[in-house]
Every structure is written in structure tokens, then in C-alpha cells.
Image (cartoon, rainbow, N blue to C red; front, side, top):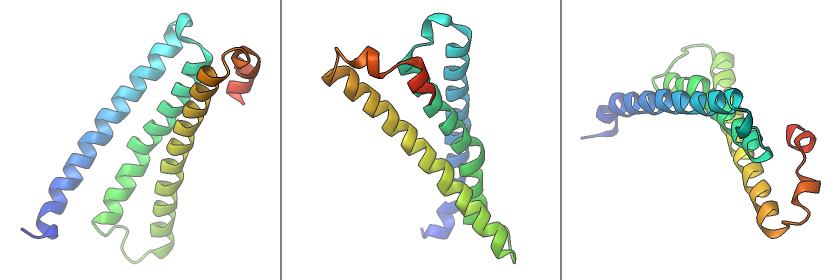
Length: 125
């Protein structure tokens, strides 16, 4: 079995993962938006990560699948735009994950300065 035979199956699995990821991250955003007790600094960072992952699931993964199957044909600039969007959204997800890691690092290793450093204003920024 060569790679060309498995491409449609891999694209199908990618779409399933994108759909489930989008639904799960929408639930995270809804939970934080609807429950005031969940509106903490840590959860602001997690919602930021969820929004970035929603963008990956709804825009970046379909763009990756389209370029994988060879679309758009004969339009180099549209192809470059789609690949740029793919990279931008995946990088935003990675940077949001980095922000969560830094916030947790500060909470663990600087617990007495955490409240002064991680205010809601700083988290929104």
C-alpha cells in the first residue's frame, strides 16, 4: 500500500479530528462564558488557547487538506495564502500554549508574586 492510497483516509481522519477539536473547544469557551466562577486568569489563557484551536480546526486543517489534494490549481498566490493561514493559526495555537505554560510556571514557582503579576488586565493583554 503506497502513500497515495492512504491519503483520502488520512484526510478523513484529519476532518474528524478538526470537527471534534472545534466542538470541544467551543464547549470550553461556552463553559467559561456562561459560568462566572470559571472566569479566572488561568481560564482566560485556556480560552485563548481554545479560540486558537478553533481557528486551527475550522480554517487551518481544511486549508491543509485542500493543499494536500492539490487545490487551488494554477493559482500560486491563493496556494501561498492558504499555507500562510495554516502556519499563522498553528503558530498562534503554539504561542497560546506557551502562555499557559508560563502562567502555570509563575503560579508554581512564584506563588507569592502570582496575584500581583497575573492580574486580569495582564491576562487580557
